[in-house]
Length: 149
Image 1 (spheres, helix red, strand yellow):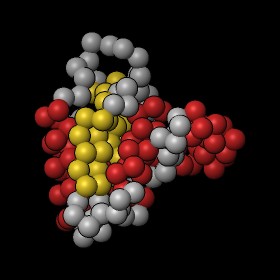
Image 2 (cartoon, one colour; image 1 turned 120 degrees about the vertical axis):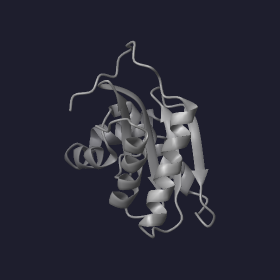
Image 3 (cartoon, helix red, strand yellow; image 1 turned 30 degrees about the horizontal axis):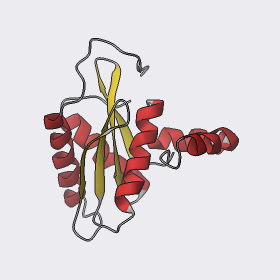
Image 4 (cartoon, helix red, strand yellow; image 1 turned 45 degrees about the vertical axis):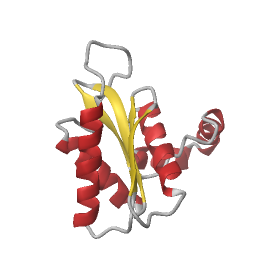
């Protein structure tokens, strides 16, 4: 799917949608018996809209989830795609991490939120295996009636 990251008449991510994404992602984590997780929802500009850290999730979980979401929002693709790209171009991805002042984490565990082909935000999670974190992010986005890229 080709997504458009430019300005358009598509409605931005709302707080109600972000809270719905969090609720569905956390429900998916519990259904999968994952360890305690943190889930972060950002808008298209990488600003925090909503965040929850489950009881027992370690102190780094929110920062890791934020970095994963920030990377997905900035690049318009999932963390697993970014991780694959980083393997083939480490110098560029190290530069992105430096440019992002440590906020850019290209690892599995995040997805962009897309409305009408436009990235309107991103979701990142941390606490389980990367593919499991990414699955709960996708579950949250889809439950909100949005698409992933």
